[in-house]
Amino acid sequence: AQSVTQLDSQVPVFEEAPVELRCNYSSSVSVYLFWYVQYPNQGLQLLLKYLSGSTLVKGINGFEAEFNKSQTSFHLRKPSVHISDTAEYFCAVISTQGGSEKLVFGKGTKLTVNP
Amino acid sequence: NAGVTQTPKFRVLKTGQSMTLLCAQDMNHEYMYWYRQDPGMGLRLIHYSVGEGTTAKGEVPDGYNVSRLKKQNFLLGLESAAPSQTSVYFCASWGRMNTEAFFGQGTRLTVV
Image 1 (cartoon, rainbow over the protein chains, first blue to last red):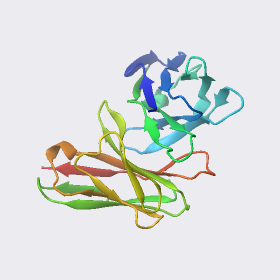
Image 2 (cartoon, each protein chain N blue to C red; image 1 turned 90 degrees about the horizontal axis):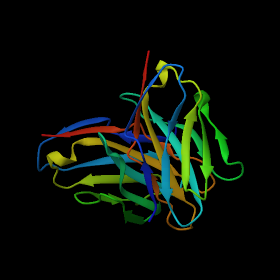
Image 3 (cartoon, rainbow over the protein chains, first blue to last red; image 1 turned 90 degrees about the vertical axis):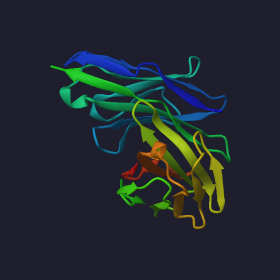
């Protein structure tokens, strides 16, 4: 069964500092990987996705993530964060094995950007 | 998100009451999902469906039932609501030809 582990529940950083939010997944089959962002009292917004091809994926708002199959990781990075990046970030995986495409989420990482 | 609509958006129930949440999508997606979101727990999968007439249990199915009689609708039912079911519920849909899941705006349910 697939699962997602987000290694940090909270990440505080200062404005303009770099940030990495870590995500590991467990699945024995091919997967699609996603990062979603949720601002307070709002729904989920897709940041970026890995389907196939280049392992470095660029998303919205200056975020990028790197798929590492050998380490089963999909860490999210941004070189310089803004106050407006304060939000909760969710990593998600869906296996592409036919017939049972469950979309499973991690527990989330709360990113707080301080001035 | 255009294409996935949840009703209602808010609801307050008394313990023991029943209700049904509706998720409707107009994108002809095969897969639909129901999640609950609680602080510190992320989104936990309650039930999901891989096609019309099929349903399957997710991580936290107890206390909930679902039905998918029509491809575009996925219903989540609470037969006898409990305070532990106070949560925000999200519905999502996914199509084999799509590259991302689409989410509804959420339903905030409070059971008193």
